[in-house]
Length: 462
Image (cartoon, rainbow, N blue to C red; front, side, top):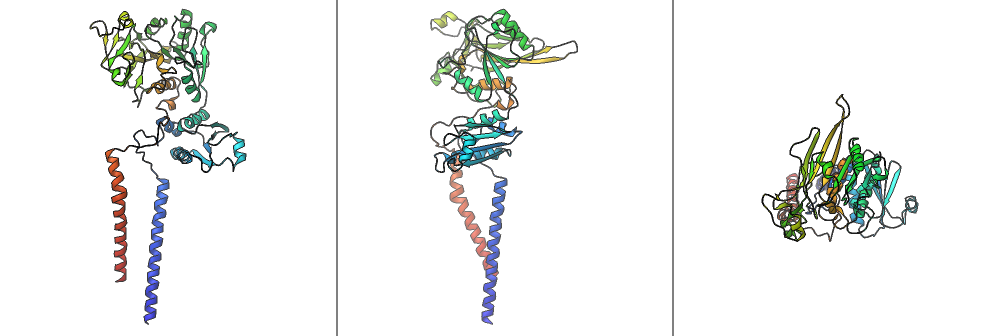
């Protein structure tokens, strides 16, 4: 009888233990399932360097075709974990993205098929088209995805023949760097000599007039005007004291470029020049939405909107300098290096240095119309090879290009190259969280679970 009772009790304990183990296993599996389906990542770094940028998220949210990404990495290749994590973020952001990490030595056929020539390359494929990037970072990957999925390739023409910035020049004042950035985003960039053309080419998605130093001929202005009347888009960048012939052309369209230069002595606080304003004030517009990065404008003139708006024209300021700035109108004083604010002559800041205009052109008596848009900057040097990497200069210009070209997905802050090491500085609240969660909360949860389990077992034994 005693042995039977002991046997029955041990069997009961064994069954209880098995049931408890199965229950715990079931809970773990349920938690794992929920974590996979409803996972969330929290980036505690100050610059969000471990999260996808706004632009990448926009591109992924609007995907209409599937994307396959294959990273060709050796098993022990440095940076493999970081690249794999980046690809996971892309797949996690869109159900249309799939990725794989392959060792090219173990998959020679795949490597040859994508023409992979080295370790670390990434192949991106969509809709039967593919491209390979050799620099495995977010910036290159997002641009590759956008190039493959965009429906048409936009052409941007840069006006030539009047001393404008050269998009092929590697000199400090050249535009090679910004041209390369535009081409990476899938734009076709070409030069345009209007004196040799009957009109602005029909494939022109955007016309850029960047820093002319000679007057644009009246016949060329007529061609530009005809282009704008045909739903054309343009960017005009006119430097201080430049004789471009665009003053009257723009004045008819509600934009005034004055014969002055903007001075901002507060820029010296940042180690800059008073003729190089640090801009932090952006007006409400799709180009500058969520834009909070300071831009730097070397030698910039004021660009104002006409007080009395013309019929069919809506113009507004886009970028303004700080309250400590002013528009200096004493050119001789500037040339002598003597700058001071003259009440009643100079204009006190904030000063508008960029403006945007939307113009409705009536086509016929039925009231049908088309809209043309253009943006005017009082400086062309802010995106040359020497200055384009400063602050938000590149992003501001590329946002302008994207908005005018109708590329809404590209109007955002672009992925940044991570500089320096991977040190992460936590805020006081984040530091407390890192202390309380692993050192206090988790041990207490384990203790609580143990206490509950022990109490339940004692109750069953009784």
